[in-house]
Image (cartoon, rainbow, N blue to C red):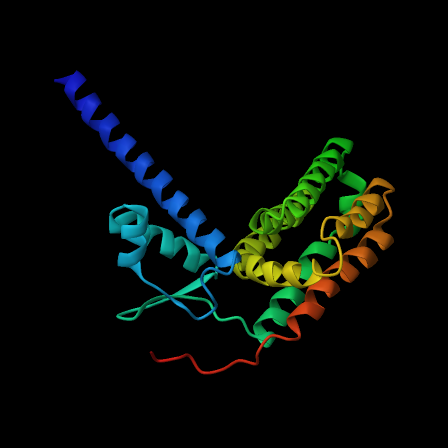
Length: 235
């Protein structure tokens, strides 16, 4: 009897793990489609269609959509379903102002505590960005750009700062995807990260702060062409 109970418990745990892995995979698939522009801001996400396309039950699809809602990448409205979050200028500028504060507020501490291993890690991420640019892997480029700043923030930040970043993560990725696409038409996204690494390597907090503000300003200038806030489409 004990062996059977153990098997039943293990089976329940495994089903929970499988479901978690499924919804995370679905969330990643939909997230990448949004970043790639396959789903546009304001576009409805059909749960049944996604379920059929991925050949999955609707349970993991719902969990994935809830995850993306928590990230701010989509909105869920009762009786109306899911839509990709709208992108407007006011929302983008507000999020980027918060991002600038989060990424520069601990500049002195960051330059004091960052290790050579952590700097090498950021170099590696930047080099992978360069390869993604070369291979025209745009979603990979955006993901690595986001990883660079997330990993940098994790080195010397408060729990509150990390939680705030997590709450904004979905929309920050959307703004970065649009900003990177615009920036990449004339410049190298990966090259724009080397001055940040150089300031960190030299332990120069003032230069790091100045460089980071300029870096985020590049993203800010790209969102000035976003539409002003408008009423949600009732379709």
